[in-house]
Image (cartoon, rainbow, N blue to C red):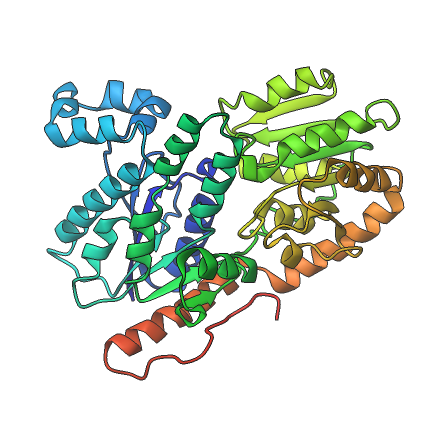
Length: 429
């Protein structure tokens, strides 16, 4: 089968979408399929078996985040092309423009590629721009991932806004009209958890039968218990985008500020380069000297960080899957997690970790204290977590279930019987 993925921002440091792309495309290629990726900056790392086609885009934020790529590797006159200038100007204030311009560039690139090949199926990784709909106008299926609805990010951003102008700006930033319209016209939507599927149904007003739940996986070749890495007592680890309110680092830092005078601990934060909010809050809460910030860890370094931690904390307000919580368990480390979104599906309360209500710093503090004071319980939970991930979550299983979906939509497109009822393939059944 010839498969083409569409990925706006594909590097793994861009978040879970990049991780998903890397491993699912790799597994499909290893299963013998021809896999291509059309991607924008920051470009993804793909397996040698996967063919990548890098698009030059001119989004405002992409330009700032990848200045060297534009300043030293791009002809200066390209910037002044009317289309590129339009993209640069409009993406300063609007995510919809960024995703839509990328999708239109991807559509033209796809047409170019199909001059000498024919893809059987297009798989969009939550771009959902109008260019994705144009791809659907040819007689071959288009499916898309929605890892979680951007309506959730929009609601949180509006809640944080301090005045009416900021609220209006954040309402206009998110591409909910475009994504709703495009998603409803694709052959099938894939989500990584039951919680994410429920959110998509609610946010997109979409029939559940249009959604297939396929849990994400964990790369257990990288994330597993390491005999040569010793657990560091009283160590706490957070992995995620600290600038994203959904990840809940504010509540983690507030929880630790409640413990600072009674419980020894040291927090390590692994986050995206250039993040400023969390370091500032550390100073405000008097946690200076008890928090270390790390950036740009390799997967191998991240695996060792999980193994060193006594406790990993996932304080999210929402998770479409919860990859750090799953990776931590794969490494044999217990997790304190909220019950938000898919975390209830990933962490088994009282067995592989401790679950607390989202947005509750006091409950978070109590759970962290309980585990830091009981290393034996941490080891027991860690062993259970490693078994759970090994048995129920793998990227090969994710790819196999995705391939089943491809075959289903291809069969329907060729005149076979459409699937009926709720489509569901769960990694925890």
